[in-house]
Image 1 (cartoon, rainbow, N blue to C red):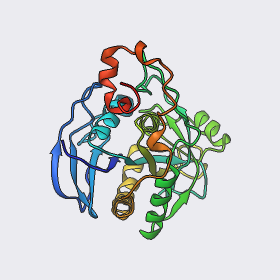
Image 2 (cartoon, rainbow, N blue to C red):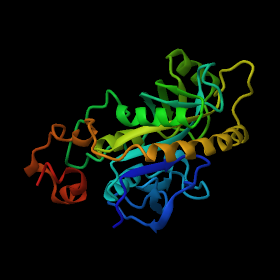
Image 3 (cartoon, rainbow, N blue to C red):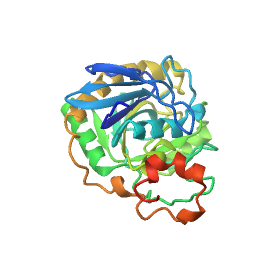
Length: 287
């Protein structure tokens, strides 16, 4: 199996990474089924990177159908320790304009019915999630975005909605009243699963619109989203390239050991099949 230290999950409009060398296509099977697509594993700025288009090549998987558990489990099996997620989103703040980027530090999860944990079916774990994004990786991503010349904002709350429909005006005004910064359909439970897998996770949120609260801007349409997203893609690829050159080395954050005191089920009570399925995640703590 190929080994990659950095995982990149591409959002709408991002189906490859420019500059990725020595690429091999890797298909991974998991206890949670197949991931969204095969992985492109290669070298970027001297670092082995695994790239996955979240919606599949051709954008064929809608947000509610993304096999997020399979995606994160597969990245873990490839050796990934850090994930940069590219997420398209709408803005609730005038100053965070379409075409800008945001490195969020909080999430409000408004998704419904998406499997959001690896710990079910006979095993329970409660991981800390007060800070849902890895601060260290977010800092690297923010600095890389600045160096790439992008207009980037640091910190803010990302509302994760179910989709695939866009917001109603009532929902948009509600989320804006909460003080949220942006809204999108894919950051959760992706971030939760990455935390459970002890993988650092940071989001490069690409703002495509003002959702539908803004009085002087048209209601969001898919044409609008795709047009502005296309302008952000080149910047996102450059940022990822810069960041890849800065993430090597030992992790000093708490992401790498978050499960140490989080598994509350007695080892003898965990079903053997569940132990086998989760060996990749829990093997260093539970035998």
